[in-house]
Image (cartoon, rainbow, N blue to C red; front, top):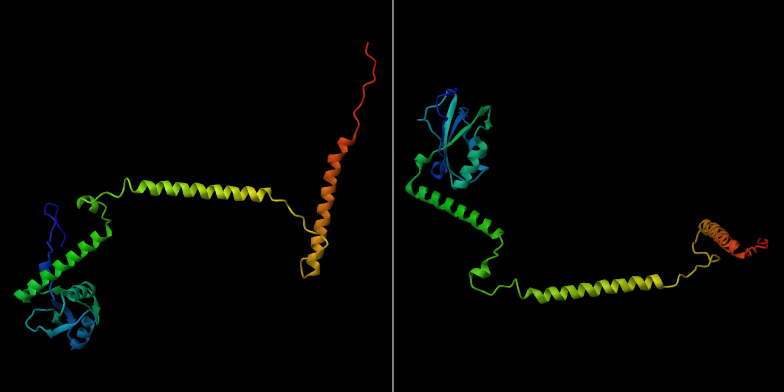
Length: 230
């Protein structure tokens, strides 16, 4: 039904007391399918009781069933999954039936929920690091003075590591470059050895040409100016 502008929106308060391990399933096809309905709900937990409710008002050609789970969590999960579920062509309407609970059932339900909430709170606290525990207990702080020697030792070791690396690099740079003989065959394949020889010959030609260019200008004699000065 559409809501008028002047009417306030409908607000429904949901509490833990609304939950129950007793469920009422409506809009079940009247085809004698109680066993099939029991198997469907039994996939979500142990069921203690499942029976039709003949005294309940229902639509034509439909039945109403009463289901009692052993655990509240199983009933909650079954209601969330099977409400509006299509069963033999009809959409099931699952609702809690807390009016059938006894006082012991209500106490057990509230105690179970209290344990669940405490477990969630404790799991959330365990993820947060306890930084101020030593300060609250009056223990000496381990952040200021004891860390200074460790910091100095780490700086010394890092300096030694960098100096050793620089010495190793300088030693590598100063090491003489050894030449490899071009007459020796280093590969099992003759084509590879021939390719190596050709490359070496080209490199030798390039090296000799560069040496000739460097030596050429130095061999020229300086010119003597014999012109007469006036």
